[in-house]
Length: 296
Image (cartoon, rainbow, N blue to C red; front, side, top):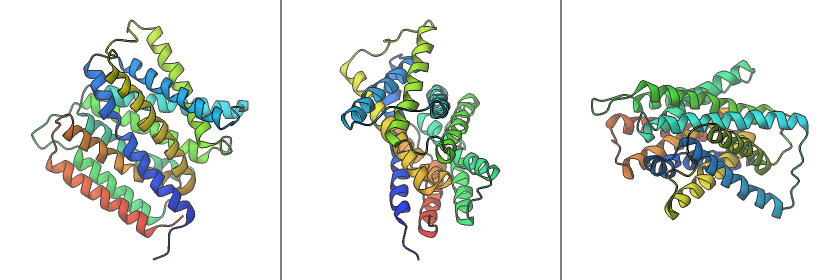
């Protein structure tokens, strides 16, 4: 077996970190929604706090914030896609269990692979096998065994989140305009777009910005949302896609549904069915196989 390349040693751990941290969305978001906070308010503070933290880091590191108009256009598109993905996911939490909603997003590797094929980048047979296996695992996880009812609205919202998330990944991987930007600067501008969009949604609606956000614990949840499933997840995703490619990075996102399911089961008391356990096992084996048999 050939040793992993330098790119693989950087890209694979980054992809795993992306999955785990993004899977923590329910842990910090659900308590706020249960208190009546609007999705738009939660996501505004999540993105806004993240932008402030990243801006401070970039400023202390004396990095330039300068971008050209072409880069601005790509970053605007990335920000809108990431924003849409978050909206769809958090709205899906209202209709189906949070673990299941986040699990269904993991269908995005199939969408990424199809987009990459359209762009004439054909994955190896090992990656295709991993994609098929993880797809089967996710399908098994989402099947009802009679102990829970699945609302189709929640499923459609999760699939919408998966679709725009796949486009986000491919653009990061393929766009030459932003290839020279640091991961931190890319994340900063993408999240800035989201913060502006969510603030606009609140201002032009009848929703109250501070409803459900009252205690220190509420603010800790918002800060945690800003740091883990936002800053860390987005930055590590950029690192992974640039080092091992969009398709492999997306397959490593299997750690996202695993994390979300564990959170849903252990923290929120959501059902952990045999189907979910079998699906997790299949997906984990598929990712391990891909890492051991492929090389950048």
